[in-house]
Length: 98
Image (tube, rainbow, N blue to C red):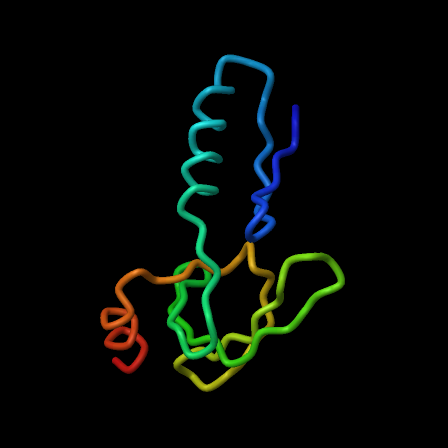
């Protein structure tokens, strides 16, 4: 297996050296081409939850850490690779305040 990291967020992909290689490479390249890091006050998806970026922190490695506030009011820090920027910010706002 070969490990490929997104140069933008640091998300890792394990690329097998078997039949499924082309599928994983295609998925990795699609992610890399569309990867956008969120700015503060933007709505993001973390797992299946919607949150808002409260603060951006510089981590030990080259990829940032994000403090994300959830609708419950709790905040957690996540790596850039765990956070997905929501393209439709109005939809994110509506889901966050539901």
